[in-house]
Length: 449
Image (cartoon, rainbow, N blue to C red):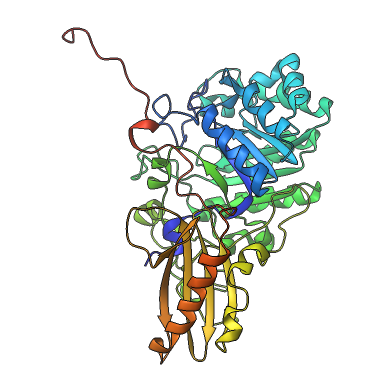
Protein backbone atom coordinates (compact mmCIF):
# COMPACT_ATOMS: atom_id res chain seq x y z
CA UNK A 1 0.00 0.00 0.00
CA UNK A 2 1.44 3.38 -1.03
CA UNK A 3 1.67 6.10 1.56
CA UNK A 4 0.78 9.73 0.97
CA UNK A 5 4.46 10.56 0.65
CA UNK A 6 4.88 7.98 -2.08
CA UNK A 7 1.91 9.11 -4.14
CA UNK A 8 2.05 12.89 -3.94
CA UNK A 9 -1.58 13.49 -4.84
CA UNK A 10 -2.73 17.08 -5.40
CA UNK A 11 -4.48 18.25 -2.26
CA UNK A 12 -5.87 21.75 -2.80
CA UNK A 13 -9.00 20.97 -4.74
CA UNK A 14 -10.40 24.44 -5.20
CA UNK A 15 -7.47 25.39 -7.47
CA UNK A 16 -6.95 24.18 -11.04
CA UNK A 17 -3.57 24.61 -12.73
CA UNK A 18 -3.35 24.20 -16.49
CA UNK A 19 0.00 23.59 -18.22
CA UNK A 20 -0.57 25.52 -21.42
CA UNK A 21 2.81 24.90 -23.06
CA UNK A 22 6.29 23.43 -22.64
CA UNK A 23 8.37 26.22 -24.19
CA UNK A 24 10.60 28.73 -22.38
CA UNK A 25 13.01 31.52 -23.34
CA UNK A 26 15.01 30.97 -20.15
CA UNK A 27 17.04 27.85 -19.39
CA UNK A 28 17.12 27.72 -15.58
CA UNK A 29 19.83 25.37 -14.38
CA UNK A 30 17.47 23.68 -11.90
CA UNK A 31 14.46 23.35 -14.23
CA UNK A 32 12.43 20.28 -13.20
CA UNK A 33 10.82 19.95 -16.63
CA UNK A 34 14.01 20.49 -18.63
CA UNK A 35 13.79 17.03 -20.15
CA UNK A 36 10.19 17.67 -21.20
CA UNK A 37 10.76 21.19 -22.55
CA UNK A 38 9.89 21.34 -26.24
CA UNK A 39 9.03 17.63 -26.02
CA UNK A 40 5.81 17.37 -24.04
CA UNK A 41 2.65 18.96 -25.36
CA UNK A 42 0.74 21.55 -23.43
CA UNK A 43 -2.94 21.06 -22.70
CA UNK A 44 -4.95 21.52 -25.92
CA UNK A 45 -7.52 24.30 -25.85
CA UNK A 46 -10.32 21.80 -26.39
CA UNK A 47 -9.25 19.81 -23.31
CA UNK A 48 -9.19 23.02 -21.28
CA UNK A 49 -12.66 23.90 -22.56
CA UNK A 50 -14.00 20.59 -21.24
CA UNK A 51 -12.46 21.23 -17.82
CA UNK A 52 -14.04 24.69 -17.67
CA UNK A 53 -17.39 23.39 -18.87
CA UNK A 54 -17.22 20.74 -16.16
CA UNK A 55 -16.55 23.47 -13.61
CA UNK A 56 -19.66 25.35 -14.72
CA UNK A 57 -21.67 22.30 -13.67
CA UNK A 58 -19.76 21.28 -10.56
CA UNK A 59 -18.32 24.61 -9.30
CA UNK A 60 -15.37 22.73 -7.87
CA UNK A 61 -12.65 25.31 -8.66
CA UNK A 62 -12.42 28.91 -7.49
CA UNK A 63 -9.16 29.70 -9.24
CA UNK A 64 -7.43 28.71 -12.46
CA UNK A 65 -3.66 29.12 -12.87
CA UNK A 66 -2.02 29.17 -16.28
CA UNK A 67 1.55 27.90 -16.35
CA UNK A 68 4.17 26.40 -18.68
CA UNK A 69 7.11 26.28 -19.62
CA UNK A 70 6.84 30.01 -19.93
CA UNK A 71 3.15 30.54 -20.45
CA UNK A 72 3.44 34.07 -21.89
CA UNK A 73 5.00 32.57 -25.04
CA UNK A 74 1.84 30.63 -25.89
CA UNK A 75 0.17 32.10 -28.98
CA UNK A 76 -3.34 31.12 -27.80
CA UNK A 77 -2.92 32.20 -24.18
CA UNK A 78 -5.58 34.89 -24.48
CA UNK A 79 -8.06 32.32 -25.81
CA UNK A 80 -7.55 30.28 -22.62
CA UNK A 81 -7.94 33.40 -20.46
CA UNK A 82 -11.03 34.55 -22.32
CA UNK A 83 -12.78 31.20 -22.01
CA UNK A 84 -12.03 31.02 -18.28
CA UNK A 85 -13.25 34.58 -17.69
CA UNK A 86 -16.40 34.23 -19.77
CA UNK A 87 -17.36 31.02 -17.97
CA UNK A 88 -18.03 33.12 -14.87
CA UNK A 89 -17.01 30.25 -12.59
CA UNK A 90 -13.58 31.42 -11.36
CA UNK A 91 -13.02 34.06 -8.71
CA UNK A 92 -9.35 34.45 -9.68
CA UNK A 93 -7.26 33.95 -12.80
CA UNK A 94 -3.55 33.53 -12.06
CA UNK A 95 -0.46 33.51 -14.28
CA UNK A 96 2.75 31.71 -13.27
CA UNK A 97 5.59 33.35 -15.16
CA UNK A 98 9.25 34.34 -15.16
CA UNK A 99 8.01 37.90 -15.66
CA UNK A 100 10.33 38.75 -18.52
CA UNK A 101 7.70 39.68 -21.11
CA UNK A 102 5.84 41.71 -18.47
CA UNK A 103 8.59 44.31 -18.83
CA UNK A 104 6.50 45.45 -21.80
CA UNK A 105 3.79 47.53 -20.11
CA UNK A 106 1.38 47.16 -23.02
CA UNK A 107 1.59 43.36 -22.77
CA UNK A 108 1.23 43.40 -18.98
CA UNK A 109 -1.81 45.68 -19.25
CA UNK A 110 -3.34 43.46 -21.93
CA UNK A 111 -3.11 40.46 -19.57
CA UNK A 112 -4.74 42.40 -16.74
CA UNK A 113 -7.46 43.73 -19.02
CA UNK A 114 -8.10 40.16 -20.20
CA UNK A 115 -8.81 39.07 -16.62
CA UNK A 116 -5.56 37.99 -14.94
CA UNK A 117 -5.68 39.40 -11.40
CA UNK A 118 -2.90 37.33 -9.76
CA UNK A 119 0.70 36.99 -10.94
CA UNK A 120 3.12 34.40 -9.53
CA UNK A 121 6.56 35.61 -10.65
CA UNK A 122 9.73 33.53 -10.39
CA UNK A 123 12.80 35.25 -8.97
CA UNK A 124 15.78 33.08 -8.10
CA UNK A 125 18.54 35.62 -7.57
CA UNK A 126 18.98 38.78 -5.53
CA UNK A 127 20.84 40.58 -8.29
CA UNK A 128 21.38 40.45 -12.03
CA UNK A 129 24.60 38.46 -11.80
CA UNK A 130 22.99 35.63 -9.83
CA UNK A 131 19.61 35.57 -11.58
CA UNK A 132 21.10 35.79 -15.08
CA UNK A 133 23.56 33.01 -14.29
CA UNK A 134 20.74 30.75 -13.04
CA UNK A 135 18.45 31.51 -16.00
CA UNK A 136 21.38 31.48 -18.46
CA UNK A 137 19.85 34.55 -20.09
CA UNK A 138 21.55 37.96 -19.69
CA UNK A 139 19.04 40.66 -18.88
CA UNK A 140 16.45 38.33 -17.35
CA UNK A 141 16.77 39.92 -13.90
CA UNK A 142 16.24 43.45 -15.18
CA UNK A 143 13.26 42.31 -17.26
CA UNK A 144 11.65 40.62 -14.25
CA UNK A 145 12.22 43.75 -12.15
CA UNK A 146 10.53 45.97 -14.73
CA UNK A 147 7.76 43.41 -15.08
CA UNK A 148 7.01 43.50 -11.35
CA UNK A 149 7.14 47.30 -11.38
CA UNK A 150 4.50 47.25 -14.10
CA UNK A 151 2.31 44.84 -12.14
CA UNK A 152 2.48 47.02 -9.04
CA UNK A 153 1.42 50.05 -11.06
CA UNK A 154 -1.49 48.03 -12.47
CA UNK A 155 -2.70 47.21 -8.95
CA UNK A 156 -2.87 43.41 -9.24
CA UNK A 157 -1.94 40.71 -6.73
CA UNK A 158 1.79 39.94 -6.94
CA UNK A 159 3.47 36.85 -5.47
CA UNK A 160 7.02 35.61 -5.95
CA UNK A 161 8.53 32.15 -6.10
CA UNK A 162 12.15 31.22 -5.39
CA UNK A 163 13.57 27.73 -5.95
CA UNK A 164 16.15 26.91 -3.28
CA UNK A 165 19.48 25.64 -4.63
CA UNK A 166 23.16 25.97 -3.82
CA UNK A 167 23.24 28.79 -6.38
CA UNK A 168 21.10 31.18 -4.31
CA UNK A 169 21.16 29.66 -0.81
CA UNK A 170 23.55 32.28 0.66
CA UNK A 171 21.38 35.14 -0.62
CA UNK A 172 17.82 34.29 0.38
CA UNK A 173 17.38 37.20 2.79
CA UNK A 174 18.79 39.49 0.10
CA UNK A 175 16.08 38.25 -2.30
CA UNK A 176 13.52 39.42 0.24
CA UNK A 177 15.22 42.83 0.29
CA UNK A 178 15.21 42.90 -3.51
CA UNK A 179 11.43 42.48 -3.77
CA UNK A 180 10.37 44.41 -0.67
CA UNK A 181 9.68 47.57 -2.71
CA UNK A 182 7.01 45.66 -4.62
CA UNK A 183 5.20 44.67 -1.38
CA UNK A 184 4.30 41.18 -2.65
CA UNK A 185 1.27 39.55 -1.09
CA UNK A 186 3.28 36.39 -0.54
CA UNK A 187 6.77 35.00 -1.14
CA UNK A 188 7.09 31.27 -1.70
CA UNK A 189 10.28 29.24 -1.32
CA UNK A 190 10.33 25.81 -3.01
CA UNK A 191 13.16 23.44 -2.29
CA UNK A 192 14.82 22.04 -5.41
CA UNK A 193 13.45 18.69 -6.59
CA UNK A 194 15.76 16.72 -8.90
CA UNK A 195 13.47 15.02 -11.41
CA UNK A 196 16.29 14.22 -13.84
CA UNK A 197 19.65 14.69 -12.10
CA UNK A 198 18.96 12.19 -9.32
CA UNK A 199 22.66 11.87 -8.43
CA UNK A 200 22.88 15.68 -8.22
CA UNK A 201 25.79 15.89 -10.63
CA UNK A 202 24.89 19.56 -11.08
CA UNK A 203 25.49 20.14 -7.36
CA UNK A 204 22.19 21.94 -6.80
CA UNK A 205 20.91 20.18 -3.66
CA UNK A 206 21.59 22.47 -0.73
CA UNK A 207 22.50 20.69 2.55
CA UNK A 208 20.03 21.48 5.32
CA UNK A 209 22.86 22.56 7.63
CA UNK A 210 23.47 25.46 5.24
CA UNK A 211 19.99 25.96 3.83
CA UNK A 212 18.24 26.04 7.20
CA UNK A 213 19.93 29.16 8.67
CA UNK A 214 19.76 31.04 5.37
CA UNK A 215 16.08 30.25 4.85
CA UNK A 216 15.18 31.16 8.43
CA UNK A 217 16.93 34.51 7.98
CA UNK A 218 14.86 35.16 4.86
CA UNK A 219 11.65 34.21 6.67
CA UNK A 220 12.62 36.47 9.57
CA UNK A 221 13.10 39.40 7.23
CA UNK A 222 9.84 38.75 5.41
CA UNK A 223 8.00 38.65 8.73
CA UNK A 224 9.55 41.96 9.75
CA UNK A 225 8.29 43.45 6.49
CA UNK A 226 4.80 41.99 6.88
CA UNK A 227 5.15 39.68 3.87
CA UNK A 228 3.34 36.33 4.06
CA UNK A 229 5.52 33.31 3.26
CA UNK A 230 5.08 29.69 2.22
CA UNK A 231 7.74 26.98 2.10
CA UNK A 232 7.53 23.71 0.19
CA UNK A 233 9.59 20.50 0.45
CA UNK A 234 11.70 21.65 3.42
CA UNK A 235 11.19 19.63 6.63
CA UNK A 236 9.01 21.53 9.06
CA UNK A 237 11.41 21.20 11.97
CA UNK A 238 14.12 23.03 9.98
CA UNK A 239 11.98 26.17 9.79
CA UNK A 240 12.21 26.98 13.50
CA UNK A 241 9.71 29.65 14.58
CA UNK A 242 8.37 29.74 11.00
CA UNK A 243 7.15 26.15 11.01
CA UNK A 244 3.62 27.24 10.14
CA UNK A 245 4.91 28.58 6.82
CA UNK A 246 5.32 25.01 5.59
CA UNK A 247 2.72 24.24 2.92
CA UNK A 248 3.26 21.15 0.78
CA UNK A 249 -0.17 21.22 -0.84
CA UNK A 250 -0.56 21.39 -4.60
CA UNK A 251 -3.50 22.25 -6.84
CA UNK A 252 -5.24 19.91 -9.23
CA UNK A 253 -2.95 20.02 -12.28
CA UNK A 254 -3.76 19.36 -15.91
CA UNK A 255 -0.43 18.22 -17.34
CA UNK A 256 1.17 15.36 -19.24
CA UNK A 257 0.60 12.53 -16.76
CA UNK A 258 4.16 11.21 -17.09
CA UNK A 259 5.21 14.30 -15.13
CA UNK A 260 3.86 12.74 -11.93
CA UNK A 261 5.54 9.43 -12.73
CA UNK A 262 8.85 11.30 -12.46
CA UNK A 263 8.00 13.20 -9.28
CA UNK A 264 10.37 12.47 -6.37
CA UNK A 265 9.39 10.29 -3.41
CA UNK A 266 9.84 11.46 0.17
CA UNK A 267 10.67 9.84 3.50
CA UNK A 268 11.66 10.79 7.04
CA UNK A 269 13.55 8.83 9.65
CA UNK A 270 11.23 10.17 12.35
CA UNK A 271 7.93 9.78 10.51
CA UNK A 272 6.30 7.55 13.13
CA UNK A 273 7.38 9.87 15.96
CA UNK A 274 6.43 13.27 14.58
CA UNK A 275 3.15 15.11 15.10
CA UNK A 276 3.33 16.52 11.57
CA UNK A 277 4.19 13.31 9.74
CA UNK A 278 0.96 13.46 7.74
CA UNK A 279 1.74 16.85 6.18
CA UNK A 280 5.54 17.20 6.35
CA UNK A 281 7.05 15.23 3.48
CA UNK A 282 10.51 14.97 5.03
CA UNK A 283 13.42 14.52 2.61
CA UNK A 284 13.27 13.51 -1.02
CA UNK A 285 15.10 10.33 -1.87
CA UNK A 286 17.79 12.02 -3.96
CA UNK A 287 18.73 14.09 -0.89
CA UNK A 288 18.86 10.99 1.30
CA UNK A 289 21.00 9.12 -1.23
CA UNK A 290 23.53 11.95 -1.36
CA UNK A 291 23.49 13.47 2.13
CA UNK A 292 21.80 10.89 4.35
CA UNK A 293 18.87 10.99 6.76
CA UNK A 294 20.11 14.00 8.76
CA UNK A 295 19.31 12.41 12.15
CA UNK A 296 21.09 15.19 14.05
CA UNK A 297 19.36 18.05 12.23
CA UNK A 298 15.77 16.80 12.12
CA UNK A 299 13.89 16.98 15.42
CA UNK A 300 10.44 15.34 15.53
CA UNK A 301 7.56 17.14 17.19
CA UNK A 302 6.16 14.82 19.90
CA UNK A 303 2.97 13.11 18.76
CA UNK A 304 -0.28 13.74 20.57
CA UNK A 305 -2.04 10.88 18.76
CA UNK A 306 -0.83 7.39 17.79
CA UNK A 307 0.81 7.22 14.38
CA UNK A 308 -0.70 5.13 11.60
CA UNK A 309 0.57 4.58 8.06
CA UNK A 310 -1.15 7.32 5.99
CA UNK A 311 -3.18 6.09 3.05
CA UNK A 312 -4.84 9.22 1.77
CA UNK A 313 -3.54 12.76 1.44
CA UNK A 314 -5.01 15.58 3.51
CA UNK A 315 -7.49 18.01 1.97
CA UNK A 316 -6.55 21.67 2.28
CA UNK A 317 -9.10 24.25 1.38
CA UNK A 318 -7.61 27.50 0.15
CA UNK A 319 -4.73 29.25 -1.54
CA UNK A 320 -6.23 32.70 -1.07
CA UNK A 321 -3.31 35.13 -0.57
CA UNK A 322 -3.44 36.74 2.84
CA UNK A 323 -6.04 34.37 4.23
CA UNK A 324 -4.06 31.18 4.86
CA UNK A 325 -5.61 27.75 4.57
CA UNK A 326 -9.33 27.27 4.91
CA UNK A 327 -10.54 24.36 7.04
CA UNK A 328 -11.39 21.05 5.43
CA UNK A 329 -14.99 20.54 4.48
CA UNK A 330 -17.24 17.61 5.22
CA UNK A 331 -18.27 17.34 1.54
CA UNK A 332 -22.04 17.23 2.21
CA UNK A 333 -22.99 16.56 -1.41
CA UNK A 334 -20.88 13.43 -1.40
CA UNK A 335 -21.96 12.38 2.09
CA UNK A 336 -25.57 12.36 0.87
CA UNK A 337 -24.77 9.39 -1.34
CA UNK A 338 -24.54 7.21 1.77
CA UNK A 339 -26.70 9.23 4.21
CA UNK A 340 -28.51 7.02 6.72
CA UNK A 341 -26.58 3.86 5.87
CA UNK A 342 -24.28 3.90 8.90
CA UNK A 343 -27.14 4.52 11.33
CA UNK A 344 -29.09 1.52 10.03
CA UNK A 345 -26.19 -0.75 10.99
CA UNK A 346 -25.10 0.73 14.30
CA UNK A 347 -22.07 2.29 12.63
CA UNK A 348 -20.90 5.81 11.88
CA UNK A 349 -19.57 7.60 8.81
CA UNK A 350 -16.28 8.76 10.29
CA UNK A 351 -14.79 10.54 7.30
CA UNK A 352 -15.34 11.53 3.68
CA UNK A 353 -12.07 12.00 1.77
CA UNK A 354 -12.49 13.60 -1.65
CA UNK A 355 -9.62 13.39 -4.10
CA UNK A 356 -9.25 14.14 -7.76
CA UNK A 357 -9.82 10.56 -8.88
CA UNK A 358 -11.64 8.99 -5.95
CA UNK A 359 -14.00 9.64 -3.05
CA UNK A 360 -13.61 7.50 0.06
CA UNK A 361 -16.27 6.87 2.69
CA UNK A 362 -14.74 5.58 5.93
CA UNK A 363 -17.20 3.67 8.10
CA UNK A 364 -16.48 2.69 11.71
CA UNK A 365 -18.42 -0.17 13.32
CA UNK A 366 -17.64 -1.74 16.67
CA UNK A 367 -13.90 -2.34 16.95
CA UNK A 368 -13.40 -2.12 13.20
CA UNK A 369 -14.82 -0.75 10.01
CA UNK A 370 -14.48 -0.61 6.26
CA UNK A 371 -13.72 1.93 3.53
CA UNK A 372 -15.95 2.28 0.50
CA UNK A 373 -14.28 3.91 -2.51
CA UNK A 374 -15.86 5.31 -5.67
CA UNK A 375 -13.85 6.08 -8.79
CA UNK A 376 -14.85 7.37 -12.22
CA UNK A 377 -16.99 4.83 -14.06
CA UNK A 378 -15.09 2.57 -16.42
CA UNK A 379 -16.00 -0.75 -17.98
CA UNK A 380 -12.38 -1.83 -17.81
CA UNK A 381 -11.37 -3.86 -14.78
CA UNK A 382 -13.39 -5.34 -11.91
CA UNK A 383 -15.70 -3.39 -9.62
CA UNK A 384 -17.98 -4.37 -6.76
CA UNK A 385 -20.74 -2.41 -8.52
CA UNK A 386 -21.19 0.35 -11.09
CA UNK A 387 -23.53 3.33 -10.80
CA UNK A 388 -24.19 5.96 -13.44
CA UNK A 389 -20.98 7.85 -12.65
CA UNK A 390 -18.86 5.50 -10.57
CA UNK A 391 -17.14 2.20 -10.09
CA UNK A 392 -17.64 1.17 -6.46
CA UNK A 393 -15.04 -0.78 -4.45
CA UNK A 394 -14.40 -1.59 -0.82
CA UNK A 395 -11.08 -1.91 1.00
CA UNK A 396 -9.50 -2.08 4.44
CA UNK A 397 -12.09 -4.25 6.16
CA UNK A 398 -10.84 -4.29 9.75
CA UNK A 399 -11.80 -5.48 13.21
CA UNK A 400 -12.70 -8.78 14.83
CA UNK A 401 -15.86 -9.37 12.75
CA UNK A 402 -15.11 -8.47 9.15
CA UNK A 403 -17.85 -10.84 7.91
CA UNK A 404 -20.33 -8.76 9.89
CA UNK A 405 -19.47 -5.74 7.75
CA UNK A 406 -21.12 -7.32 4.70
CA UNK A 407 -24.65 -5.88 5.32
CA UNK A 408 -23.18 -2.41 5.80
CA UNK A 409 -21.22 -2.62 2.53
CA UNK A 410 -24.19 -4.04 0.64
CA UNK A 411 -26.47 -1.26 1.91
CA UNK A 412 -23.94 1.48 1.11
CA UNK A 413 -23.39 0.18 -2.41
CA UNK A 414 -27.13 0.03 -3.05
CA UNK A 415 -27.54 3.60 -1.78
CA UNK A 416 -24.83 4.92 -4.09
CA UNK A 417 -26.27 3.12 -7.12
CA UNK A 418 -29.75 4.46 -6.35
CA UNK A 419 -28.77 8.05 -5.56
CA UNK A 420 -26.13 8.66 -8.21
CA UNK A 421 -27.97 10.68 -10.85
CA UNK A 422 -24.89 11.17 -13.02
CA UNK A 423 -24.30 14.77 -11.87
CA UNK A 424 -21.19 14.23 -9.68
CA UNK A 425 -17.93 13.68 -11.48
CA UNK A 426 -14.52 12.25 -10.72
CA UNK A 427 -11.62 12.33 -13.13
CA UNK A 428 -9.66 9.31 -14.26
CA UNK A 429 -6.98 11.40 -15.91
CA UNK A 430 -7.25 15.03 -16.90
CA UNK A 431 -3.89 15.31 -18.58
CA UNK A 432 -2.43 13.86 -21.72
CA UNK A 433 -1.33 10.24 -21.61
CA UNK A 434 1.14 8.22 -23.66
CA UNK A 435 1.94 9.28 -27.23
CA UNK A 436 -0.61 12.10 -27.16
CA UNK A 437 1.54 13.89 -24.54
CA UNK A 438 4.66 13.98 -26.73
CA UNK A 439 5.35 16.18 -29.72
CA UNK A 440 5.94 14.32 -32.97
CA UNK A 441 9.40 14.96 -34.30
CA UNK A 442 9.81 15.17 -38.07
CA UNK A 443 11.44 12.12 -39.63
CA UNK A 444 14.72 12.49 -41.46
CA UNK A 445 14.35 12.28 -45.22
CA UNK A 446 17.78 10.79 -45.71
CA UNK A 447 20.72 9.24 -43.88
CA UNK A 448 22.30 11.28 -41.09
CA UNK A 449 25.39 13.20 -41.95
